[in-house]
Amino acid sequence: YLRFRPEMMKSLVERTELEAGLRLAVDAGQIAVHYQPIVSTRSGVVVKVEALARWERDGGIVPPAQFIPAAERSGLIVDIGTEVLLKGCAELKPWLAEAPERSLAVNVSGVQLQHGDFAELLLAVARNTGVEPRQLVVEVTESVFFDDDCHVIQQLTALRNAGVRVALDDFGTGFSSLGRLQGLPVDTLKIDQSFTSMIHTGDETLPILSCMIAMAHGLGLSVTAEGVETAAQVDYLMKLDCDSLQGFLFSRPTPGPGLQSAIARSNHAFAALRGERVSGPR
Ligand code: C2E
Ligand code: CA
Ligand code: CA
Image 1 (spheres, helix red, strand yellow):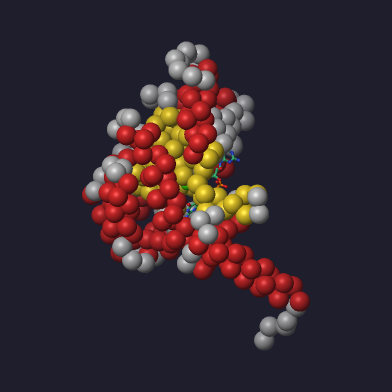
Image 2: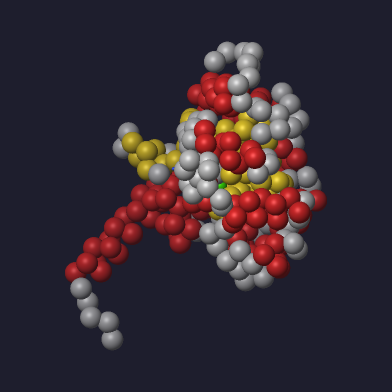
């Protein structure tokens, strides 16, 4: 037995309204994509951008935390994910075509990988938009590996065989079975923002952070730190040999038309932190 409480009805109605609204938004093309630059510590410039979904609703923007869970529950994430991929490839193709080491990362939910042939879909989008598969990165969270799902592993393996790279997002927040990490089809670890935010002054001793980076390198993986907001965090992460940095210190996610200047600003911000000079527009 479950006693009925009026709040139950309220949350059910809210949930249904959110899902119905989201369905209409997907059909009406109201899912937009913003991009956040990722700086390589080795080359000192932006070599990757992450595509992040936005819902443009009533003149405002609904952040993904508010609609991605509903999209996953209702299965709409499949359409949203495809839209983000298509728009991302189409908008970023000119930037990607300028240098082979540049790449575009998209977030992929377990729901997309569990059903149908996601690998084929992604490769078809790459073909149709003229983007090289080796310039694409799929970001998945540890939860996609929970059930030892062979289909998911097959999809990721097929993508990697075609040159696509796989990043493990929010690393350190999930089950983090370190023993399994070795066998997973993954190229990069994205260290969750909660670890980056442990760096305040830069004088801390943070063995978890240094071990995570050393372990990733030992496994042949590259490391991106998420949520970089301060110069002290940049210094600390660079001393640990972190490969790339992403965060508001360089740039917030921006719509496609503002991306070129966001990239230039990020390059300048990094160079300024390293005490170097960069040519080109600010
Ligand atoms: P995520 O994949 O971990 O993306 C990084 C999030 O951290 C983004 O939030 C970004 O705006 C935020 N962020 C970046 N740098 C900083 C920083 O320096 N400080 C702080 N406080 N935050 C920072 P956003 O765009 O709100 O996205 C939230 C989450 O929604 C994403 O987390 C991802 O899990 C999910 N998401 C976004 N777009 C998609 C999508 O197209 N498909 C799927 N499946 N999930 C998506
Ligand atoms: Ca991500
Ligand atoms: Ca993340």
